Length: 509
Image (cartoon, helix red, strand yellow):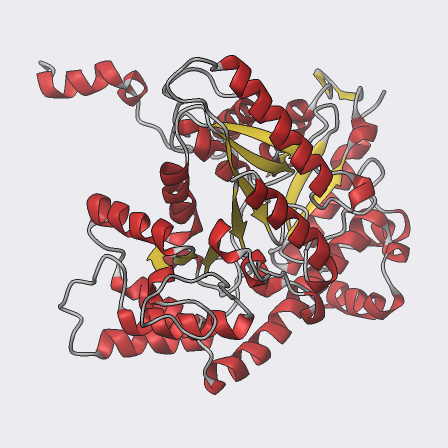
């Protein structure tokens, strides 16, 4: 059959489209060179997942996907469901939405921000600025926080500018700046800092990077610089939270970034599943003087049981929001109106919403805590958890499994797997496991030399996959680290723990 010339032109540009592909979509390429080493390792990890997925139908063994960022299968937040239902039943569903979003909804969300403590000490001189220095022009809707982050990167970076990203962090966010020819530099998070950003190290890194950029691009029309710091709070994957107890640290971070002209991108998508209501993640834009230099990202995907809708919004200085709205208009005309309606259900300060919020999240947080304590007890032994959680874990095991293999795990845990000191999560639903003790071991013709070998071993023996340490920017490349979700059924958590234990037992020196 003769090839179509127009299709051939596309295939010449994108030769990888010649074959049908059922795995991961392409992660994309950098236009002006190669990815940096940390980002290339993320790309390599996705290539490995892709090759593993290609083999998943070759036998009937159940696949255990612990890479997922899906939240727990739990009822969606009731006020969201009500808001979406009311909108669909309304008479104006035939109308296109505005690029910036519905004014009434933006004002409702503005009341939520006021309730949460957002404050702008240096507002513009417009009549609609409220008593905390904000207006509806300080926010707009996006298709999830990933879309928001990409728009922000497009706006604040020029080629070879630097975005500083703490490591570990969410790997797919770290890739986005480099796809548009900016650069990512990792700020290592350390055990001695409880895996929280060290402000002194941050400032030293900013100064060091700016000095190197000035030397490298001296005499050119534009000298790149550090332009952003990604502050994931709570952090994915560590689950570490910077709340009111870390006020001074957050203020230092904000002041340092302000001093050097570096935007803080405050990713707050996991904020509502902090396990302690008393130490809920504190947005930097609530600290007096920080609002104008902070870009805050909110979304429904992780906390509100509605990830499939891909709903988010950005809060920032009007100048930033104006350009985000321009980009949305130019790219897609407007964000779907149903997104704004869902956000309207989640983020307002009505008595109805706040009552439902307290009821809903009290139960949801406990579901995550129970799963974490179960997973921990199976990995580290039941004596690793507090006595207050032991009866809950034992009741879960009795109710959800007939597999007595867990009895051995409760006694000893999984030999060769552990949770690193200071890395127990305070939010979210991820756990970082250390498998360093398995390095150098082998089974038949498979030897564990690095994290890629270990993932392949687990997939070949028990069809288990998870995120590699390099895939979430773990700062020590020699460690064997895996990010596991525990937003899973009790049955899956128990089964995977037993299977990992059996698989590890097969390894020998």
